[in-house]
Image (cartoon, rainbow, N blue to C red; front, side):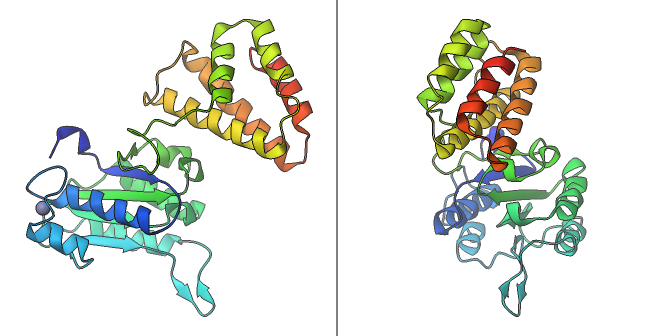
Length: 256
Ligand SMILES: [Zn+2]
């Protein structure tokens, strides 16, 4: 297995569904397969992982209640796996815990997971599947690497639309008139477009902060500023502030 793949915790981001489940199994197999990366698919570990019967692979999902699955993954479920994680593997060299809907962990559950991510037993690996990395606490996120299997992404770096890219370029230029031009030209954005734009910029900023995406020259301090600013934009949208006002805010605040 390639050295770069060895981490204790991975985030696998993408829409819920069979493709993501499959990607998680593939990653689990590559962590357990003694043969190679990508997993060979033939050894005992691979075969057991792919048929869902490997004793060292645990999948955590929302518990079933009377009316279908419960809303959240709760702290008790996480405590059970963190207690299990300290025990030696049954037959493989590692133990893998797939949290199939990590974005459904409530805050208490995420904090319990964080404790083990901060000091994981040597043989334990965690795969956190989520619709988006933003659904996880930043403290949890920072302990994980993005899985190369991320759906619809390459090497874990977000794909930027032209809008997000030109905003970040304007911001890194430090030129107020360039930022102003950008914002003036986006005043007619719809709410959805504005939300998509802010989400993308936030994703890109996170990727730059952790080195998954090249920083066009913003520097850490400005990246943190933009991260906070995009958070504010998303919050404004939730409170029905109009895109026109939001781009007005960005025109003023981007270079502040
Ligand atoms: Zn194998």
